[in-house]
Structure formats: structure tokens, C-alpha cells
Length: 342
Image (cartoon, rainbow, N blue to C red; front, top):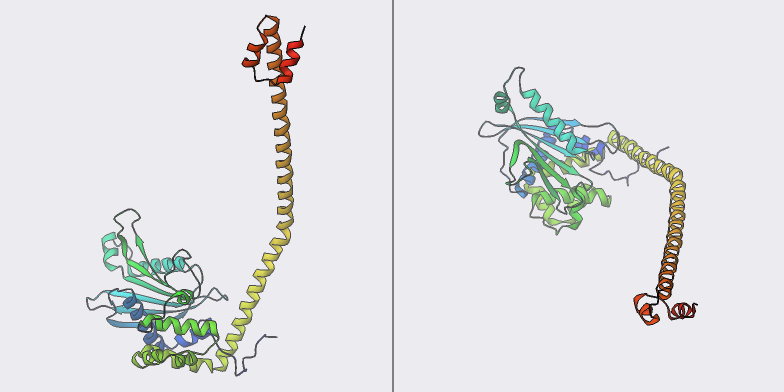
């Protein structure tokens, strides 16, 4: 039995949930306009040149089949005014190993564009430019607080130059939005604010947009954003999408429960071992400290015995007791005993 009812009128669908994003971008027209808007907003925010000329094709795709390790992707093949082929891949809420997936995807595309027997020069001439834009619902780079994280293949020794200009992209870490100063004049901020606010505050896209007049103005001037908002309302009302959302939600909870169970199993198995190991470590340390203390005491006692023995020899040889007292670090009582020696 599911924990939520797909027919509940109060059920709000997250735009980052796989069934929702997948249904929105399944429509190639919406996918093209919305993705192009996200691409332009990202490049503009990062002050990068616009490489979109003529759009050749728009291909929405579902990328994975497991909860929390899947997402939707839109491939947009374009041709610049300089007749350069550029593929943009916009990915919504992909999984944690997105960088590996991007590199693997680019390698496949580069291979597809080359022919058997091509020389390296011919392969380089045919190699397309691939730019990835990943909208992440998690923090990928914990040591950098900026929301947009550009990536390229770079030389690691100075001067730091791009090694392969045909591969690169932008990881957009949506949770960083909470640390930013609001800026609704920035198109990318408008996109990210709408998506992430709806996601974490359990609001519909319409509710989020209605909260801010500047978002309403953005929707009026940006056809891709407006079409995305409209499409969200349509798929949110779809019984099929709502059923898929409930299944996805339950699978996600089940996976999280399995992870919690696995973590507990590990704790149950290893915590007693760790506690025993810690107890043994403390015992060994205490034993070593006691032995060191005893060895030190023995060494000091032996040294004192040797000093007293040497002092007695000197007294037997007629050395004045005053000289012996100055020569040896002995106690007054010990000197007095030596003095009484026959």
C-alpha cells in the first residue's frame, strides 16, 4: 500500500522528480524551448559566447531506471553560424556520478562522428563540440560555494590552458541557491529559484511564480520558461504521471530505508568490534605506560647504586668527602652514610 494517494488533490509533484521532469521534457517542442532557455541563461550568466545558431534536432531522453539514480536529458544538436556542430545536453536531477557519465557520453559521440581508418587529424576535424548543463539537486563540490561549477579538460601546470576545447559543461548545484543573494534580473537564477523552491517547499510551479512579480515578468518575456510552466501544470494533472510519481516516491523511500537498514547492519556488526578494539588499545596503552614507568624506576635505581658504589671506591682511595659530595649528585643522607663507612 502506497504512503500517498495519487488522487489526492493536495498532492504536489516536484519538478525535479524523474516522472515529472521526464513527462515535461518528453514533448520535443517544450523540451527544445525550455532547454534552449536554460542553455542561453547559463551561457549568459557565465559570460560565455552563444553557440546556438540553427537547431537541427531536439531529442528528449530518459537516462536511468533506478530511483535516485536516474533523470531526464534533452539532447539539442545545433549548427553555429560558422557551420560548427555543437551538441548541448541539458540534464535534470542526474545521479552522483554525472561527470563520469558526461565523459562516457562525449566519447561515444566523438566515436560516432569519426569513420574507420580516419587519421587523428581527420578525427579532430570531425570532432563536435559537446557542452553539458547539469541541474543538480545536490552539492557536488563541497569546497566551492558557487552555484555554477564550469568544467573543462585543462592542463594542470601553468599556464592553465584548455587541453580539449570540444568537451566541457556546467554543473549547477541548486542547493547553493539558498546561500545566494536573490537576483531576479539573472535568467539562470529565475530558472533555478523556480525549480528548487518548488522542490523543497512542496509548491507547484504556478505557486512559486505567483509569489514574485519578477518571475511573472520573466515568464512573459521568456517563451521557454513559460512553456515549461504550462507543461508542468498539464503533466501534474495527468493521472498517469501522478501514478508514476507515487511509485517513484515509494521506491525512493524504500531505497532510503534499505540504505538505513544496511547502515544499521554495518553498525550492529562493526560497532562491538570497534568497541572491543578500543578497549584492547587502552589496555595495551596502560600496560605499556606501566612498563615504561617501572623500567625508568629500575634505571634510576641502578644509576644511583652505581654512583654510590663509585663514591665509596673514591673514599677508600682517600679522596676527601667534600670532593666526593661535589663530584656526585647524591643526597646529603647518602653522603653521610658514605662518610660513616669504615
